[in-house]
Image (tube, rainbow, N blue to C red; front, side, top):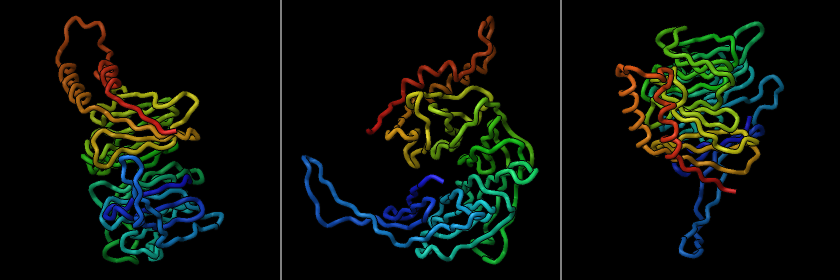
Length: 328
């Protein structure tokens, strides 16, 4: 698992740091000494560790992934290779030791995501077991976290797939819809309808890092090698809204993240590049795209290009509204 840093939801000075060796809760502390550099007033900050826990070293129970929820309690879920999930509140438990564990299956966990809307729901993707398919399961943790800590969680949705799961994400504007990225397709599943998909898009290569745009929930992003793709879940059968060559062809995108409060702003880092890329997308591109969708749905006569999607017509316009910056 790659090292990661997450800011807590209700405290702008606390952050959670995790890697293969340990996980820590830290606080950013301002130094009293200030100095001037030109016209900019710089404040020195230090990071103080509040508590640190070593990651288990058991060969059969290694840490695979973790997820931070969106509630003020800042619940953190740690997923292990044995299928064990350990959950604690980083805001209320600074010792990081009052964890609530549950284990629903013995299959290794590949990724997890908390729901944007229902803070009691978490989606977990499992690796293939012996002769079994890959699995996506949604759990309701209300009793486990808030009422009866000794009770097990409740599974409210389960889906088995024959292909490897590359990523999962919730949609903010549709709390019952899940994005599932597999090695052969991108799917939207409704957790109220077991086994049925609202949309399916076939892909030649796995789309990694699928994540929903937090301010306009119908948009989501993913990446493959050095390309960043942005889709609209309402028109998943079409090509991507935007396909951007984010970095040079000899680089591979490692991580993407939407800005939680700034609309249409996404950042990414490329593996072994030392560069940070930030894309600011003009809202006008999406407004114009909506108009293009409406026009395209009207009957057209004598059209010689019936296979052209609204996205391909807008590709040049939208790409011109991207700005890329990087730091060496």
